[in-house]
Amino acid sequence: SQTIHQWPATLVQPVGSPLSLECTVEGTSNPNLYWYRQAAGRGLQLLFYSVGIGQISSEVPQNLSASRPQDRQFILSSKKLLLSDSGFYLCAWKAGDWNTEAFFGQGTRLTVV
Amino acid sequence: AQKVTQAQTEISVVEKEDVTLDCVYETRDTTYYLFWYKQPPSGELVFLIRRNSFDEQNEISGRYSWNFQKSTSSFNFTITASQVVDSAVYFCALKNSGNTPLVFGKGTRLSVIA
Image 1 (cartoon, rainbow over the protein chains, first blue to last red):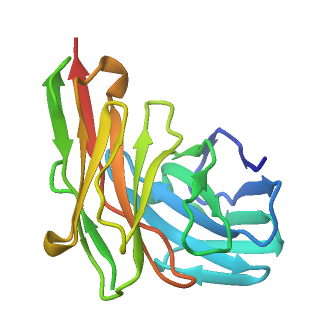
Image 2 (tube, chains in turn brown, purple):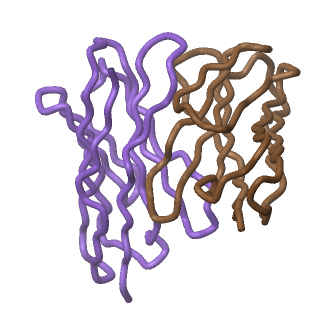
């Protein structure tokens, strides 16, 4: 069966520090991968999605970036965090067939102080 | 362009009441998929249902039912005889054909009071 791992679960980082959140999927190949952010009390905002290694689509211009160095690995990064980067970050995967549902990781709660 | 609107930000009901969560979508594609997810306090999103644009049959799963109407671009979700464990944020989502992303509404926070 397929599983998705996302870590860390919680993170407190000072303003201006770098960020690296990692997401890996097991039990499938060539998944579509997504990073979403959920600000406190708000909906889900799509940040990045990837349909293959090295292929990243950015939905929102910001100081975050994403990379997909391997088929089942998706990394969210920042060189310098802002206070506004605080939120709940969710990684998701779905099968390459476009008519299937997405499955989500357990999320990372990031607080920038 | 894709858009999902969940006009109800928060709903509060008393246990055993029925409640309907509204979802209205916009898309130019004729082939698309609609989804509902539940986000309990733990934060992880739990998949509930997927419907494709060619299947307007309503679906029932236990206390949950979904009403898909293309004429009004709506995909509403009803919980019958609500329970405290139903308390969560519920998201409606839309995906067009091809390699396009899953787009979510802003969610509806449902509180079921004992």
